[in-house]
Amino acid sequence: MNSLNGRGESNRLIPIINDAGSESTAGGGYNFKQMLIVMKFGGTSVGSAERISQAAALVAAAIEQHHRVVVVTSAMSKVTNSLIDAAQSAAKGEWSPDIRQQMLDRHRRVADAVTSDAGRRDTAMAEVERRLDRFEKLCVGVSMVHELTPRILDAISGTGEMLAAPLLAAAIAARGPVSSPVDATEVIVTTDQFGGAEPLMAETRARMAARLRPMLDRGEVPVVTGFIGATTDGVLTTLGRGGSDYSASIVGAALDADEIWIWTDVDGVMTANPSEVPSARTLAQISYSEASELAYYGAKVLHYKTILPAFRQRIPVRILNSFNPAHPGTRVSVEGDASALGVKAVTSIRSVSLIAISGTGMQGIPGIVAKAFDVVAEQQANVLMISQASSENNICFVISSAEAPRVVKALRTALDLELSRGHIEEIAAAPVAIVAAIGDRMRGTPGIAATVFGALGSEGVNVIAISQGSSERNISLAVADADAGRAVSALHAAFQLERVR
Ligand code: ADP
Ligand code: ASP
Ligand code: MG
Image 1: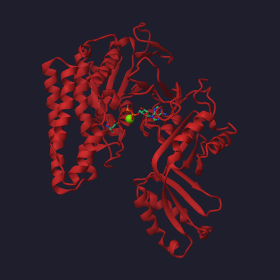
Image 2: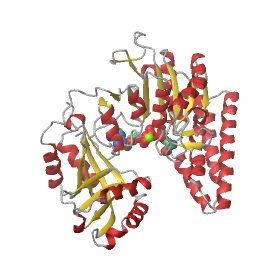
Image 3: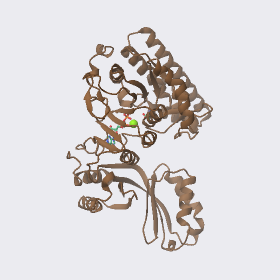
Image 4: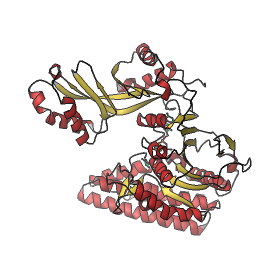
C-alpha cells in the first residue's frame, strides 16, 4: 500500500500519441503534441484505493508529459447500484442508516490510503460527508412519503460520482499536480428528462469555459463528476446508466479537447464481449459509426450516446485499460480501419422484448404501422430493431423488456377498433435477445447474410426476426434469450474474428 502515495514509474506505462497518431511510450522524449485530454475512469478503474491511486498515476504521467488533463470520474464500482437499491427500499418505507455508514467507511478507507496529507484528506472527507448527509435526508424523505419520483431517484443515484471525485482529486494532488473536484451540476446543463437527460451544448460550453478554463490555465486538474448534470434551474439530472462515458464526450466537445480517453477494465473495444467470447480480440482502430453501432447494440464498454458529441467535432476517442495501461487500446476516428473487411464485431442485447402485431386482416389496412409507432413514441420507448414481413401480416419491433408491458397496453388501447374488427388478431410481447454483426465494410461484401444464417443454422439457433440497416453496417437478429450466447460465439467463429488480420 505504501507505493500508493509515491510517484512511481507510472509515466513509463502510459501510451503516448504523437501528432501523426503513431504511438510510443512516454519517457521517450517530448517530440509529440501537447494535448488537452479528457480522461474518464469507469467504476472498476476507481473501485478501490489501489485503483484510484493507479488512476491518479495515469493522470500524473500525462501531466508530466506536459499534457493538460480534465478528469471525469464514475462512482466507485457497485456504489450506484447500492444507492438505487437504497432509494427503492426507502420507497417501500424501509431506510436503514447502515448503508450510509458502509459508504462512509468505504470512502474513508480510500481517503486514508491515497493521501498522507491530513489537510487534504479532511477536505475530501468533509465533502464526502456532506454528500452522504444529503443522500440520507433524501432517503428518509422518500421513506416517509413512500414515493420515489424520477427526479428524486436522480438526486439519490447521482451521489456516487460526488463521493468519488474528491478522493480522486486528493490522490492526484498527492502525486504533485494541483487538483480539485468539480460537480458536473455546475458545468453540464441538461434537459429535465430525469434518468436520461440530454446536454444543452451551448450553455454547457459557456459554463465549462467559465469554470474549467481558468483551472486549466493555472495548471490544475479538474475532476468532474460523470453521469450527472443539472437543468438550467440547477436541478440534478442523470444521463442514464453507464452515462459517465457520455459525460466525458460532452466535456471533451465543450472544451474542444484534442482527445478523449476512456479508461476501463478491458484492452479496448473488442470483437465481442470478452466475458462471453474468451477468444475476443481488441480492435485497434474503429470508425465513429462502428463505435456507435457497437455501443447501441450492446457493447457495454461504451455508453451508446458517447460517440456523437466527439464525432461532431472529430475528436479522437481512445478506449484504454487502466489495468494494462501500456496496451494501445482502441482508437475511434473518422477513417477507422480502412483495410478491414466485412464483419468486425458481434454484440448482443439482453432483457429486450419482441412486440408483434399480427393478423391476416391487416393487409391493405392503411395506417396501422403509423398508429403503432405513434404509440411507441408517446410512451418514449426506444425501438432497437424493426421488421415487417412483406405479406403485411405481421409487424414486429424490439424494445426494452422494462418498457414492454406499458407499450403493449397502450397499443391495445390505440388499436382497439382494429382488434375488435378482427383486422389485428394479436398484440403480444415475448422476451428475446438481439444479436448483431457489425462492420462498416459489410456494405458491398457479398455473402455475409449467408454466413450468418449458415452459422446459426448449424448451431440450431432459431432466428425469430431479422433486420438490416440501410447503411448495411449491421445485421441484427432476434433470437431466444437462451440462444444468445451460442449465437454470438457461432458468429464470432464463422467470421474468424479471433484471427488477427
Ligand atoms: P466501466 O466501469 O469502465 O465504464 P463497463 O463495465 O461499463 O466499464 O464496460 C466495460 C465492460 O464492457 C467490459 O468489462 C466487458 O465485459 C464489457 N463489454 C461488452 N462488450 C464489449 C466489447 N465488444 N468490447 C469490450 N468490452 C465489452
Ligand atoms: N455510476 C453510473 C452507473 O453505474 C455511471 C457510470 O458508471 O458510467 O451507471
Ligand atoms: Mg461503463
